[in-house]
Image: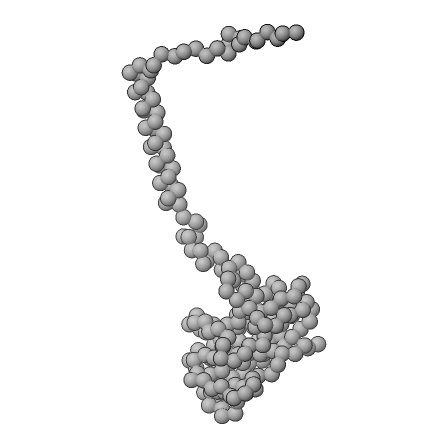
Length: 220
């Protein structure tokens, strides 16, 4: 059987339109102009938009801080931290020769306990009363930072060692976090250390006998 080609129904036949007249052209130009102005206005709003808080990125993405004092157990989400003791020295020794300083060594003995998964402490610093931050010293091997993995539920005690100016050592806060570099939106433990007077700091710095930094150890 031969199929008969279907013819389009009259409603589907598009009519030819005459070119727009002068009035229609003016109206079209006006519409385009209106759309252009609206687009520019929206673009201006987008260009001038700033996030809430004045666009302070550091403020919005700062770490989530849990604060405490010596003896408190402070959460850094993936681990808990507790400062056991704080001492100072003019010289420290881990292996080999003693290392002296033009300031004072601050030795913070802390207990770290991983919470739910194996983790490490990637960032350790001291902040003084003037908001100056002093990272853990690279002049001595730091056995509690980076290289050691903490297992969930197993407390480990060890020393975090810092080299700071004497005028900074009287009022310090310990900062601990998992990430060594990018700590945005992560958790951080801030533990306020005891306040020491200047004569105490000077006595620590003048001590001739070096303080030996013990190896970290598992504790009950």
